[in-house]
Length: 498
Image (cartoon, rainbow, N blue to C red; front, side, top):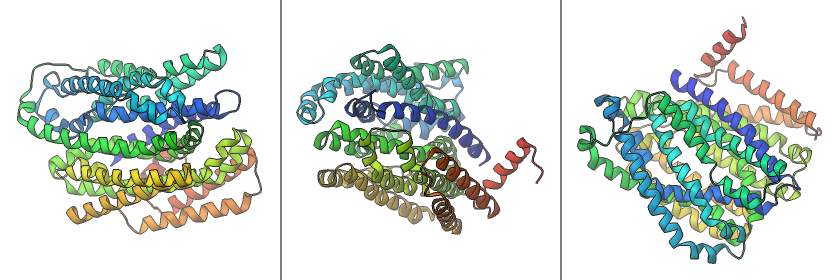
């Protein structure tokens, strides 16, 4: 667990550097006088639709790499390992087929979005350069994760793209480039992260390409194809479920309110940073543990990930909610974005539930029962589509938030029950309840003491007091097994003796 703890902390810190740039970007996108809400909404639609097409193009290759890397690593020399070569070739084929499909269905996009989101129709084909570089960056990222080189790849994925976006926004503001050029350059931003990671792997001498089929591939290719088929189908379902809210808003509402929805999603996405770090570190550990039938390690990763992620999500969300109103007023954002507050609350609860259930998806996905994840995805899709269509039509962007909360709560509950039923694994303990009580107590103390301070000073005071109360109580009551080692390391680095 020390490896997971250390790398997840480093990754989280680096990712938060990316969020600083992301916050700057979001501020500039939403500030009056720079971008219109429709233009900001188009950039969000680009990313969501790019991820949608990426789901088709990747063919489920990432899961194959996670699942079978231990077998390649334990039985082949680096130069004989053909797994990366296979994934890159199949990935390119996937991109070509996806692009052809995207062009064939362009008339459908025109009919569906031209009335409410004409900008999306105008720049639709520029989504595919984004898909290309996102796909190949993700393949290299999965390869880096399998090598347990997660820190730099996480930084590139989270910070690299946002820093590139900051530079592009600066060009838009200072050089006054036209928005048409801006959005075209935006579609190539993942190229920066892709080439940086490629150079990194080459310098590590880990980027080995071979066209000779290895004995491991010959032995496992049938199992790999079966996994590929199920994961591809499952990923399609999952991507569709994750994209349906954006498609519904763009189709039934407009790009301006899509911008509000995405702004609210961005605010709550800060909560998910520790989850992304722990997932990237835990996947190779879980994959190796399943191969070695080390169930104690799996149970330990499950329980600790649940507790630590619950603490992190509650901590971050409490700070956001303590200061949301003050921040909107102080930074003088477009008044339209104030309408997204309830979305922040609802999606914040969804993220807390998702993180508090630990790495259940990764445990199932790296096990021999990975097919169950496909059926979970089917359930998620069948929940998300009708919920979004019905609730978005009735409630607008709040309906999209409610549908996400309902669907993901059921989705995670099913996976929790499955792991308990099959392996007698469940991630919760008494400390789970204590963490919730602790957070509520710290939140209400800070809220009632300083609720009248609607200023930047109020944000600082509330946040600092909450951090002190939360950290002190967590350390005093030792709410997680990982707190004491981290606290001892901090004291040692700072030279503290108490």
